[in-house]
Structure formats: C-alpha cells, structure tokens
Length: 83
Image (cartoon, rainbow, N blue to C red):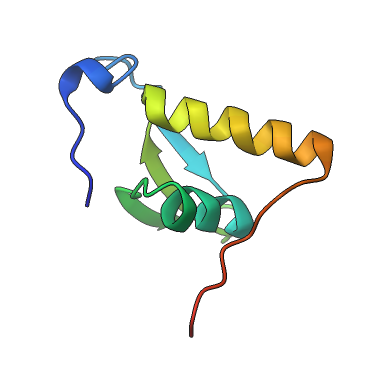
C-alpha cells in the first residue's frame, strides 16, 4: 500500500478528503495502472453498490484528470487482471 505524506493530501482536515469510486474500470485503472491503493472497500447502505474509497491527493487528481481526458478522446486503457 502506498503511504502518502500529509502534504500530498489536498485537505487533510476536511471531511471531503475522500474519493468514492463506484466504477470498476476506474478502480482498476487507479489501482493497477497508476498504483494508487484504496484505503477501504464499502457498500452503499441505500443502493447496496460496492465502492472503493481513496484519499484525495494530487496523485489521485492527476490520475482522474488523465482518465477523463482518455475517456473524452476514446483512448481508455483497461489493465488486464488475472483471476
């Protein structure tokens, strides 16, 4: 698991310092392509959907920006995961 320095976290005292990822493809991109580890995996109490929780940091924001740009350009890359 990648440990972040406190200066890498965007707003460490803010309750909004976490990013909830509901997309399985985005999760694989962040974890396996970018090496950003989730801190928890949870289930939404209302929808029962499973999501991953990431700490908001500059590295995550850069990866999300890259994902968005690739999505807009139609050049998404999905890492192949061995089962």
